[in-house]
Image (cartoon, rainbow, N blue to C red; front, side, top):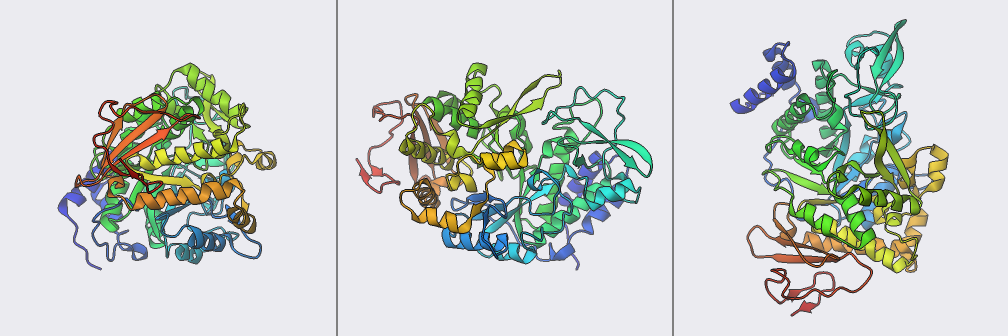
Length: 559
């Protein structure tokens, strides 16, 4: 295959490689990179990316075995359920790590190029992709201690002997930002010699050394393989911690941003319809830095939104949510937000930093424990600990221990999803938000992990029965959420690039106005955060620019 490359693309890739690896030959590195073009058939017909997204886009987040049926591979069960209930409602399914793993429910990868045999195989994933785009995780920061790469490292076998970050335990690591309260370094035996390796997340998850270009090229190959197996969106897990330099915080280092930019340039060259999504559960200003200047991530999670919505609905007061949303910067061209209320992890606490007073943050944390949830802690650089994430299902997070009103709880859940769907960007829904799943305390007890509270495995027959039982909460939440997604997909004002205006109103209401790019479609979304009926004066600022239209939810005319 003979390919012609734009000179500016080659120059940009070369410059990025030099910034990452100044002691290596630029031309050699560039040659290695270009040899990956066309690997696995990717890049042989790259086409042109017109629009990467539109108002029909939405994402379902699920594990490959979140729904199970006896005698059937879980990926087959997922496909059947998705085809039956979710086709034309969701455009994309994010199948959380489906690789052989040793811990962390998939995020301690043992083999990056294999599907877990107990889930199915690559054919099942590609079959799932017949009616949906697919999102895969690229777990870059670390690999499993039980995997072949690390076993070869301990045997001092090339090239794996240099794949993992070794560190001197006598040096000062007090500046390193930690997402966990576990030891940063772990002792290992490497061909009879005692070494210490970097373990940001756990002893079983050993950090990969991207200061070695061989590691980069290994993952460019893995990335190309995923594209050949149907991936449309690549989620860069825990990317903020990727690059290690002793004497620094080891978070958001310039080399990390440079590497994300290189990945974007690479996928744009070989398959321009690919979307790079960064997972950086950090304070808001640090999070949006991964847009770069429109040359880094295509899409970032809006991590501040879930805890702000939770606070607003628990208190009935949306002033902090409104103030934050009004101050959101416009994403650069070619970039957008991924909005969500819950994912497989907990609700992040760090993204609330500076957005609400400390006493109100403490109240949110306390409110989660009141509702049967758990709190995970992180280690601070001064030796103290602070909340890192809140572990609870979204359905139970919006309950009221003082007023166990099921109908009110359901309305809160639906209101939270309506807020997320109205915001500028692409909505993503976790399977257990869609199915109104209660806290899985049994799962926590069995696994010993707080995050298991929100990772229940449904029996396919039980879930289908509940969806057909009009008295169940699942039958109240699930169809209404997919109906809202369907309504949203028909309105050009909800295109991710359409204009957004957050409007001031009464404290108990969150108001979003969206206007289509051609100015022909104007939608005002009003969200009642309280348990009572709100009255909003028509003269309230410029909230009502005109009287008349259609209520999208009810279909009734408004005049």
